[in-house]
Amino acid sequence: MNTSDFTKNTIEASIRIGLLVLLTAYCFNIIKPFILPVIWGAIIAVAIYPLFKKLKSALGDKNKLASVVYTLLTLSLLITPTVMISNSVIDTSAIISERYEAGTLEIPPPNDSVKEWPLIGEKTHALWFQASENLEDTLIKYQTETKKAGKAIIAGAAGAAGTILQFVLSIIISGILLANAEGAYSFTIKLFNRLTCIATGKEYTDLAKATIRSVAQGVLGVAMIQATLSAVGMMVMDIPAWGLWTVVILVLAIAQLPPIIVLGFVSAYVFSVAETTPAVIFLIYCLIVSASDGFLKPLFLGRGMSTPMLVILLGAIGGMMMSGIIGLFVGAIILALGYELFMKWLNDNESAPETSA
Image (cartoon, rainbow, N blue to C red; front, side, top):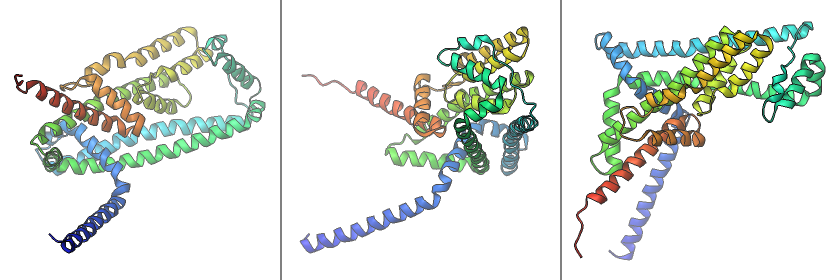
């Protein structure tokens, strides 16, 4: 090949590569707003598929009908608690606003035990006592902090509303994927076969599927159980804005933090306004709820998988620290795949015949 042909081929290849990169970038920008809902839709579809099969069987193996019923049922399960929690927050806010404007809003004085809280006990007791004595002067004194807290709450509410809308879209997408589950499964196997260049696509597809279901049950499932139990306890004790605290507990539980972080302060409030016996019962209940993940996680996390539970848990926590809630699943899948590839390489190396010197 002479220099002229080489230059011609190089220019032609560069143009093709440039056009391919341009096309890829343009396609990515088009689908970028839908990437996260599609990923969530795929995760939900994989996690819920065993239940979907039972639903389809109950409906006479009518795939499209089962998909529609699943979508409507799941949307109702998402929207109903959201409306209940929103109503709780709105009602509590309205009552506080009405009482404040009427000058009848009273804050009960703190219990002396608040002073014994580590690190923040003294300051919390002083601020709480000052607010119970004269709420208006306290709000004026801490006007800057109050405005910042109000802006943070409004921003959080807006973010939560956006998240709910995103999940509505993701549930609809998951219904579409479930209606075409076999095709999606075959596509994933082909993709893994192409990426690994070896016929292990089914093995890695099944591993990703099992990892998603394990994290859904062991992390999100346990978090929802803890949040639900916490909500029931707070509703029984008539805790103001119990819906808001339930959301905070759910986020903490997903982040692998103990719900007692919130329930401890709620229990302190109960001790200051209720009789000793129900307050003690509520505190014990909160401790049980907070510690329940200790026996729930081993029941759900990593069940039916050869990958160790520690690998799945580390992947979920590390992924969440990097990418938020979506990282729970992506991190666990990537670390599980990396672990399996490493173990495969290690075992292949051990099984290789030794050469004599």
